[in-house]
Image (cartoon, rainbow, N blue to C red):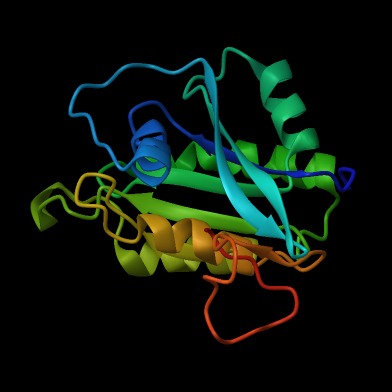
Length: 196
């Protein structure tokens, strides 16, 4: 288990072109760009509340290719939580998450119940004709892995903040929140994380 520090590290994995960077940029900066620019690895920071102290949500946006297995393994070993992104328009992009999930299991231990993981079907704004992965298929894959599932659209900002909020809500070892300075929801729950 990574050491407890002022950083809470979330790692975003997925095939090239599924919208990993778009999701992160929409969340951190509130922006969306139409053009696709491949990522090697970028890190973004957002202030959050962690055990009633201010700390940093560090989001690592990884490469969509499998050219850098050592970087992938390092990101997993340092990560506290994971977002596994596929495009609902590409069944192949869902298949490409399977080996990543296996590496997470290998490095974090076979029981991932204490590790926050979200399987995310992005591009849910696309027309039904373009969809290759149904909501039911996404839910079934998440159930098989024992992880949470959510569909998002970075383009329309559908479920983007909710994705990160739900990921933090899955954190059991500390109280992490997206809200800073008393702006949290009135329901005070131990072991809940919220974005400020």
